Length: 191
View: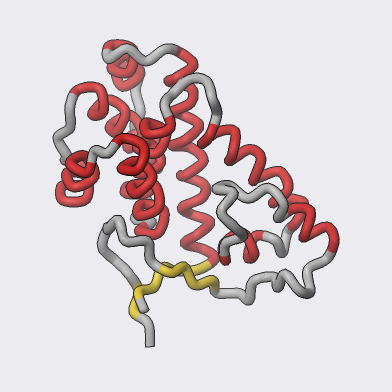
């Protein structure tokens, strides 16, 4: 029997949905069309197959996710991934934290940042630029949000433009939603 993963790690666990995912072999044309634009373009995940039960929502979600996380202008991809990681830590979503921490490392080669975040979570001490990004994302991800004007000013003080700050809001916010959706639909397991 598999065990639920409860600690943060860069080893991406297997995500097990509570409902049976859509089967590619029996998917409707609408479901197939909605699954055409997957977030990472690396195949159709169990999560996407689960979301395909509502193809109308999935057809809107995936392009929005892609624009937020992989946009060419504004915040760097690594900084977007740090925002997603911070949101996932706040929301205790070990699956998303593993995925986005791994992507942060892939983009930046900064294993030290993720080691600090996973060891100290919201008390992690990072360099000033990344600290402002991490803190803002974490504060925005709490319920109710704790992000303040001072947090926004910290982003400006470390050199983020308004577009970069908006990208950070979007990346943290979409993970506030995605983490809660993943918790509702399934759980991360280690085999």
